[in-house]
Length: 432
Image (cartoon, rainbow, N blue to C red; front, top):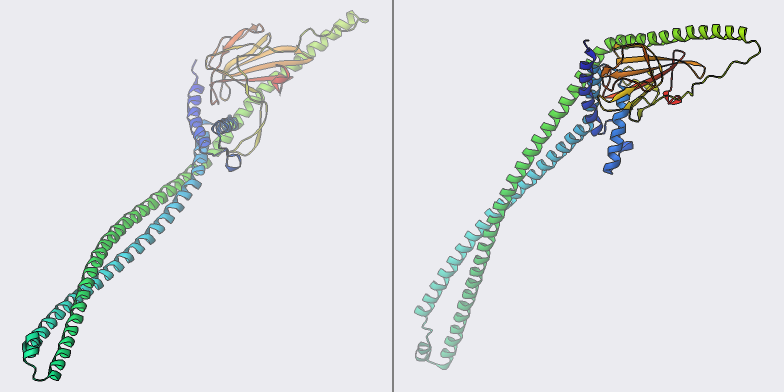
């Protein structure tokens, strides 16, 4: 038998991969439920994955994949915007840093130029002072005869000797002051040379800092451009995916309408079985009372407790669910029991196989009519099977009827188990 639902299940597993990625970036948890402990975070993510799996269980593979992709993209946008904001701020800071570094270079160059001018002026002043001392000393000693013997032998009177002695001392004082000034100028020259060397080193350092600041500014601008490109790509992807989802909504509504019709047909079949059984029970009761007018009807012998259909616990309960794409509430008409692919599935109670066939939504499905239990006509369904072990006839309680699978609209291997009372789906935990 050809089983197109197996391919559908494979496609939905791709959607589930996207789904897990959504949860890993906090798509469903959001900031309100953010946790820091790794084990708590994992539990929260696992729960979020299960919740969205349940919400999208009856959704086509393509639409589910598009929806999870959209949510993943939406989850990335705030982080991308934040990255862009940080990159722009970093670029602005780096640009400002480069501007200041350039100003420091200009200041260092100006200080270096001023120091060079001062050094040249000081060297000229020293040269002039040296010439002045040389000329002054040469003229005094040649023209005035201020040697000690000249002052003694060249003086005609004691007063002339005294005057010549005072004049000689004055000349020596002037010469000493000039030499002291020359020494100070030399010391200033050394200080200026040291300062010029320091300013030149400072200018080199400032230029290196300016270049580094320019490199950082260029890198920051490139990072900002990359962040902007990433954000633009996310926004474009988001718009494209949203358009794809919108384009699939009409087909999805028709498909879900077909699934609803399929579900209603099963309900009608089971309700008709229950109606006929009640009529038959009423007929039998009337005959029994006719034969035993004074004897009360014996109580039913069934215990009312079903056999657990497969190894595993319930990981998705019976109840109403909200469709996140089509925005409506729908009934999850059974419980999902976890299990490995190929794991045995057993009849929950003795009964008659109503159907064992491939359906579009439930995949490989077995329906068993168990007759009257607890005063109602009870039936059970076993969905998403990987293979059939029965195709019709009667089955015993606990008899192998198939294997766990993920056919139809299924996101992973599991058993979707339903119970019907008089054709109406009820919570299976009332019977298990």
